[in-house]
Length: 170
Ligand code: SF4
Figure 1: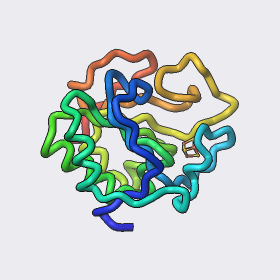
Figure 2: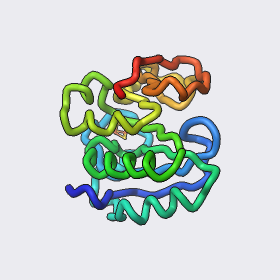
Figure 3: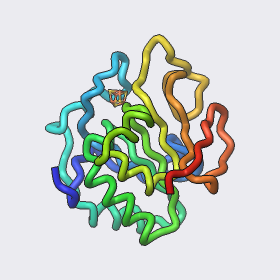
Figure 4: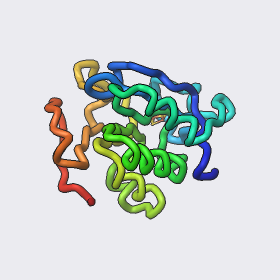
């Protein structure tokens, strides 16, 4: 792993599926959570993805002035160093918000020095593995009831049922 390249499945532009409003979604490759019933099992193996530079991803993100950004997968936290670099540059070079989906819990991320670095640049974390027994198609932006929409900055105030407000780290 390096901090300059990310292994992705695809980038979807102008989607409304991954968070509020229009977003550029980066779907990464690589996930070892292997949740039964996963919506995207082909993303588990990095060999199914391809490598893209952080610079090239930033160019796509910045080309659309109206879209905010979402990180999904796969699990971006298996490429925490490179996604942290991408998130840092998004925050430095744009005013876009970042939502990030992960199979790790917020507490697991806080306990890992490398993964924790990314949190300072995210606006919202949707955390936890998909648990088939808790699947609920009525939920907003998550598949099972254990998953939480955690606001990491107070300004990210779109009201979504199930949101967990948190005191920000920064
Ligand atoms: S964390 Fe997400 S991508 Fe990974 S196995 Fe679970 S549902 Fe699938």
